[in-house]
Image 1 (spheres, rainbow, N blue to C red):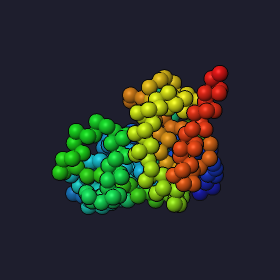
Image 2: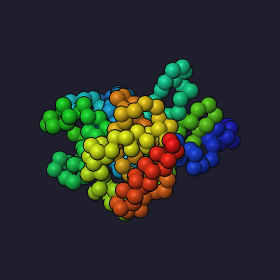
Image 3: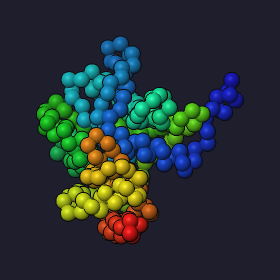
Image 4: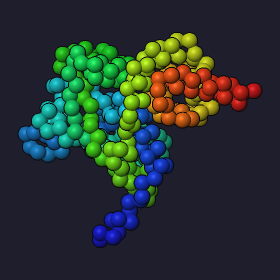
Length: 254
């Protein structure tokens, strides 16, 4: 039986890691599972999601919710993400993230950045983010189970899923001004990134986040992800990459 179980799990490779990170970055909602404090039973509910610059999931939840009471009493939780489309929902890839929830205190730089990134991804949340009973939690990753489709099961570690190093903080510091500039003055370039590098359909895409590995985009209720040709090492690399990618995309059109 043990040998059979091992055969089900594939060796983690670059393709699996890329899929896992994409599922996390493009998720706009997920199923959060916590332990109900009164009974010890599992409790699952749907929550809106975003990611911090390093890839850590972020959720914004009310203190009145049952799942908030659960992770306050016991921070162990899991988050299932993975968008579905037409046809069999079980045919689409999904990932279960095993985490420990940590509430971010208002007024701290960490909370301000998390709130900014969450609202960039989920702008409708501005209606209640300022209410006193709402708080943002970081779901600190420990491990994950990836189901990439039939016969494609993987076990991933925290290091497989998250970005690390000084570039994370460097890009975070430059992120919002770059987003504001691009969304205000370079809409055509954003659509080039979406179409040429992300193979995304439609026009009118907006940028919602930058990180050393890539950029996050939305168009209405759709979310997309575009990777940089090379992982960024410092904030100056962000502008250089955006300029070069726009040139390449325009050249491919002509």
